Length: 256
Image (cartoon, rainbow, N blue to C red):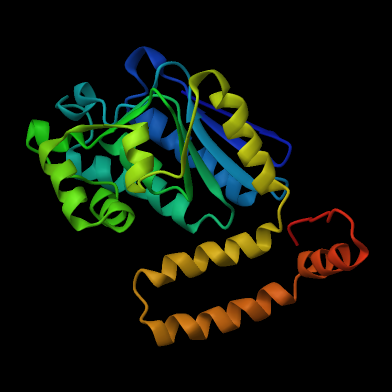
């Protein structure tokens, strides 16, 4: 249900349940977590790309599983399926790109929104569908969405469950960029390759700083920026970047 491969320094995670629009069941969730663990542990993975096959990105929870009396209950589904995925993406010390190839609904939208960079097909859309069935947004939606687009728009989108097309999402700051459908795969792959070739130790420290900025005050943030800048300046990539600049050549970063 998950395809995983490593190429050009990019760990590519592809949801592969197109007949169900990649709606998530336990097996898929655990495979997803396993693929993220590989990205964490594999030294040759320097960036991560999350996408899906077919017309949808992810339709969220498979309701047949959620309503099956023999399946895990809703609390277990959140605790064991979704929350670990969100935590792993946010703690993964490498840039993570969501390449949204179609509709992202419910927890599927939440997974996209927690990634570092979100790109989407022009034909893609985002739906906070929870309210349609009497549920509340989960998988970090109430954390990430207001921070991306502001409280008022986030509240309206979550309560009304209005579908937001990718152009609207880009305009309101929900996502980084849209790509034409015909060039989406190549454009998103080129973005992932670009990040994988960058000084990824510095990118990891930037990600940690952004994570901490959600709870720190300014003085706390200034202090850890100072500390992390010292760490960045001690990397081999910083030395390579300075040498390349002075020698007027293209740098060859190693992520070290």
